[in-house]
Image (cartoon, rainbow, N blue to C red; front, side, top):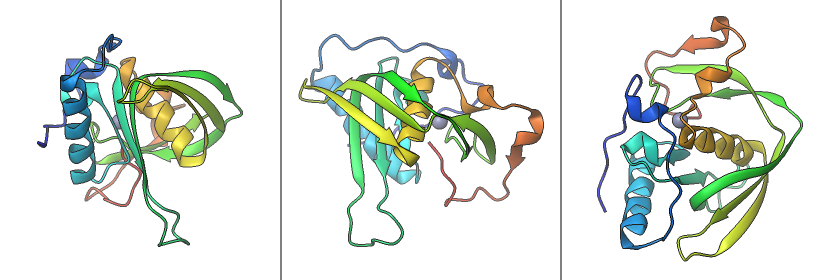
Length: 172
Ligand SMILES: [Zn+2]
């Protein structure tokens, strides 16, 4: 596995719409493995392929265990061609992005989402998500469509500079 450089704004790859994967081959699995390692190294909870300069529709997400249950394991998702098939409700969340270091913002996200995707072994799955997983899925699938969380800011006042970059904040 290898660490990949994470692109930051205004890199044009972050504004490109990623392409559907037609066949999940060795190179896609290698990309997913490298993205997991890169995401963990950056203390992110999610990463989209555009952020590491690839144009395929693949994302990785790792949700940490709840703070009140240290024995629980983090849950890792490696998803190919993910798409949101249903969303409901909305709430204001705090969000950051590895491609926009040093900032966080307050935006509206859905309460619940249902996502359809392929696993690395080519099985189709559906994920019903709420809380942090729903937020991360929306954030990463936005990336695949060239959308950044700052596009959802209601006003400029909703964006805050954090100095120094706080590793505890939600970054993906
Ligand atoms: Zn991001």
